[in-house]
Length: 459
View 1 (tube, rainbow, N blue to C red):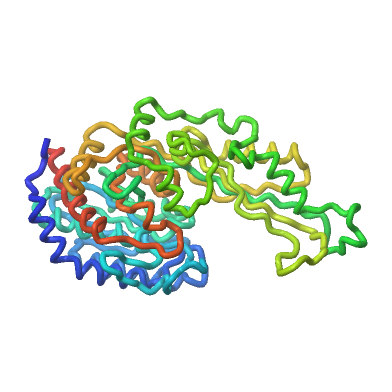
View 2: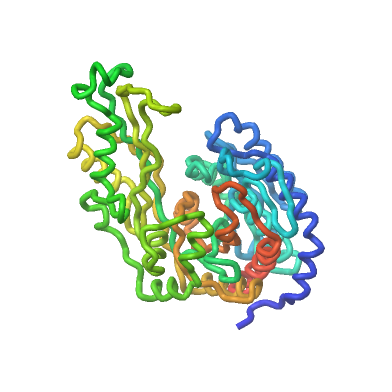
């Protein structure tokens, strides 16, 4: 049932009128290399935060604030319509991944506009969707939605949101409770809107083995010397089956909540294509081509992944040294109800059984998030996306992690919904990252409609 009075054709015409302003602002943002992972970019991250403050002030926010933390600041803004009206918090992030890949066909931090597509690091993750949400929210307010809007733009999401909770504590009572909507997720395919009903958590590790002080010649010490590269390779093989991807750590799967029958039906009806998945990600082969099995593996099952084995000589040719030290970089993606700290203990215990000299250091951790697929807020997202894109979304799960989501759920005591706009071909974290006008303009309409849907719920 239609819950608002908005006219789609009128909104579509409005998006045409604001297109130039949207593209101009996105260009300004993409041209700022706000890479939170690189300490030398700290000044650029701050410059991005200051640009965000200027944008939100220009958009008429009643309150705009740069909230300091031990790391990068958080940008907070509030658009007040009526103190007694409900509040919706819109979350996005403006920090980006590094862009060191050789496959970039243009300068990654120089905005490039080709037809209806926008290229540059951050275009889809997450500057383009953030601005689409802002333009849409402003339009919803201008068209009379009786709702207050809070904006939270983070600048440390790509490093796991280590100081986000601190920012929420600093804001205190200025941050009003209410529903939360996040626009930082990916659809299944163009024309098939998708809403995550869960996010995987994350626990990263380094496995370190040190057996000497300096490189040694294999001709004089080989056979007697321990080789930490070989021993860590053995540890890796004892932790994960390379062919199936299944983790060998005892107890690893004990707390996994399996997808419900309804979730599996939603997965099956989502429009997911194995061939398109392989094309989007440039895969020549994958572990299985069973469609449902692939979806379960990327959305609903935990992973144990190796990201790098560092040690010894890595230059051209072969230098016959035995290194004194090696390090294995590892992560586990986790699903409800797995707890990062519990999994870290299991992994460390297992590694010690395999090789007692290996030091396991658990590093960054994010808890998984289990969302909702029914109720008034889920229905509001469905109607808003169907209004904007002509098709109701399916509820799936998201394979990635957003650290701020669990924090907001706990601190604001609010339901967290998702209204993502990105597509697989947009290249999250990949070279030649891009966004497009079809998704941006549709997102503006969806957010305008969503505000009206939420306002109507309170009547």
